[in-house]
Length: 396
Ligand SMILES: Nc1nc2c(ncn2[C@@H]2O[C@H](COP(=O)(O)OP(=O)(O)OP(=O)(O)O)[C@@H](O)[C@H]2O)c(=O)[nH]1
Ligand SMILES: [Mg+2]
Ligand SMILES: [Zn+2]
Image (cartoon, rainbow, N blue to C red; front, side):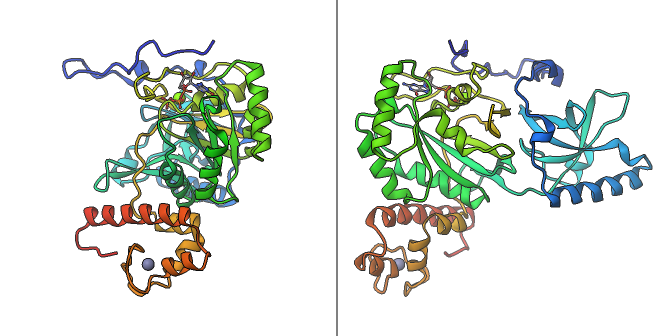
């Protein structure tokens, strides 16, 4: 039986209550299960060099021994408090005051950091975040909001999308991939709750038409217990040429690599990770009967080591994924449409009705499909709108 949230929503602090200290809010280190081993995490050469440089500089500036600085990886973030894994141990850490003063990047899960650990303390202090190989971020609070890093140094974004909803949200799936590519990671689509789809073939065909055939797609129903039904779905998936089940997800995340799950609340992300782990580590929540919406069960960002594979970061569900300045990601996700758009007569062509439109010509010539052109147009239009809102003087 899966662990379930006792309440629909997290209890909210009211103004009258005193703020709780870190010790009260943050789970004790003893309770941190399934952390990866330090040796299983991959730190790039560039990050190692940065660590050597930064720790030497800090040691010289502080007049302390360089051995007080260690290389660590942020494996958990609970309400902003990181847990850091070093070659020696796992420790809670606070942020160095200089980080706020100098407006330095705050660490995210997956970040490699330079952490100061003194022998008489059981907590560390994050001094610097080392350069990121990828930075999976989303725009929070529409176009005038801010970029929020969800996870760093992730190789692959597992876009979790639940089948059987009111409609198949092609734009949601496409935008998730655009964001992953824009942020320097690859993306794979994990279609969860396959048992709820009323027409698996139609769903897969429609998604493939928009994503193209080179995007890995996996079908699964990790939250369904019925073995017989699983076999039926596996056969259907095989018939459609789509890898089936939890093992197919595991195969996407080879040892030494790091992935994260990205999806709406209730998409079944934690359920999937529990199935990969082989036991119910992560809390799973109900969805609202009315509209299938999840209840934001996962609140911590947390890296778990998957047996026989790499690591995966469980994430809280995200309702919106606005596109703001993701042109590069859009071009990477839709290269043939972006190439056609470069041939448009007008620089601000919307590819809807303008004369001399390269996309319209490519559609005519069959070089671009209507399914992909439609989603590209919609996402590009959204980006144009958002950038205007961000800065009314910019014309795209
Ligand atoms: N029918 C069906 N239900 C599933 C499946 N996988 C998950 N569920 C249900 O979907 C609900 C939400 O699952 P979670 O794993 O908590 O979803 P989540 O994406 O982690 O949600 P947040 O943590 O809120 O972001 C639970 O009631 C699960 O039992 C599945 O394969 N089939
Ligand atoms: Mg969850
Ligand atoms: Zn055009």
